[in-house]
Length: 217
Image (tube, rainbow, N blue to C red):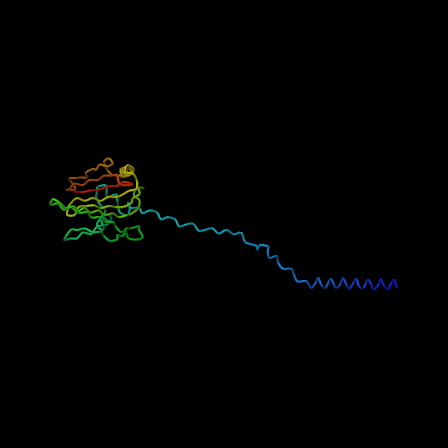
């Protein structure tokens, strides 16, 4: 009897182990841990560099400003000054000129215009000033614009190149480039025998900079 009990007990133990094995095989596969962070590529995105600023326009070459050594305007410079103001051929009244195309600039430039009239005592004085914001460089100087001023029905007129630098700096640079200039604030007469009229040139102070002025009258 003892032998038979041992056999029966062993058989039951085998059945129990077999059942546990079947249950283990029927368990579903383990799901991935949802809390685990997904693998990422450690790639840094670098923003493209901003486009380089365009080089300033060399107005000395574009407008041949060196012609001003003798207080003369190159054809390119004279054309711009002439277009800054429109003059009625019959009344001689002035008004602002239209947009002006300047070599080196991607769009036409529009001049500003001012006309002041003073009457009284038989006088009729009409002063005109026009400016063109034409930024560039000339012999390393920063040009900020051109200015034209005159009196209607008069020979008195002036044209100027405006600079961002101090007048002393402008005068020194222009002298190094062959200009004959008096002290800042003074002017020098240019070849009066050859010109047939009074023509002066000089460097003066302006608000925030300086100007090279050529005037007749």
